[in-house]
Image (cartoon, rainbow, N blue to C red; front, side, top):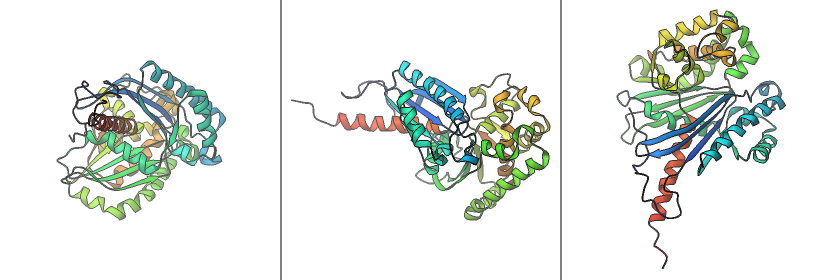
Length: 350
């Protein structure tokens, strides 16, 4: 696998003015989920010491109203309070909290950001689709196979779907060739098509809609020809693919360590998608690794996934339970190491 680790350090002997053992935190506030990771650097990456994830559906209704709904903001503030409390308990030194598609589109995001600052004590930063793709790629890069020259990395989010096209075998390491953010995700598609009671024709309509959005990306990059030549690996970093992996492995409860980095054949992924479509909402909710909160969204995500698999049939899908949060942590820790080296070069007083 491609190693995307930090410069080696043993955690001791860092210069004055910087903590000898830094603790970093990353908050990723998406359209559907609020996620936190707290970690400390190790010689080859980082060690997670705390984590939190909750479905908040912040983007509920944004597609129709263009605004964050009061109930959605209330749910999200509750989740962010838990994040802030965990960060205080762990003595976090460096942190970054980012918001994505729902907040990019919401006309009242500034008011919500001020509430988060005032009521929770977190500074929330809305990031561009390009920055979201960069962070997600940075977080997922260790799972890429250096023996396959190209990679298609995608993230099916709540309010958007990001795709990144990479050249892996460049002399300087993985190179981003192109990326795209489609304004379609499991939350807004579910609101438009009725995810809880999604019919077969509605499912096919979503597949066709997503396929139309992918066509320009294919035209720009000629990915299908590389796929046909066996030169492309596919990596998915969304709740849809991690849920499918958990179901495929027969897990009674979701376990990140059993899912992250696993591989699913495209045919098996499509079979699972169609099986989930055949179930009603209550039946999907009863499936381990899905539950009530995801029952109406997972089948919509399956339709998006099918469109991607049909467009670029690379054969196997590597599953990543990682992304923006890990990318933030790598950024924070790399900056910390750079600052430590800079301080060490300064002369001592006197």
